[in-house]
Image (cartoon, rainbow, N blue to C red; front, side, top):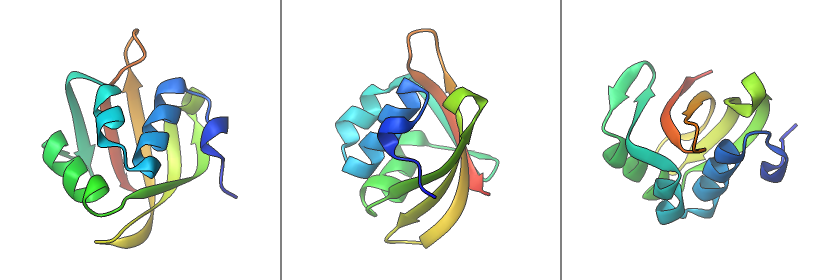
Amino acid sequence: MTIATAKLSDPAVRAFVGAVNARDRASFMALLTPGATMSDDGSDRDLGEWVDREIFSSSGHMDVQRESDHGRSLVVNYRNDTWGEMRTSWRFLVDGDGKISRFETGQA
């Protein structure tokens, strides 16, 4: 059962999912701290390059199946034009200003 984006508990994570699904790169980048980092399957990646390739140039879409850790950990059916659909986990670190300083994703 998919959780509607508007029902996600953490405001920063809710905005992140909304920006991905709207394919709104500018709003997405505005949610991140300067120097934000990310990893994919345990390996740190260049954030700008990764989000362009895996989200914005390949029509990425997140269908959230489950959330935990006050909305900062998600299990998502993620799909894009490159890889099709896969079950993924996402974990977010959010700073005191409500900006995402790091996110980690990988196969769930």
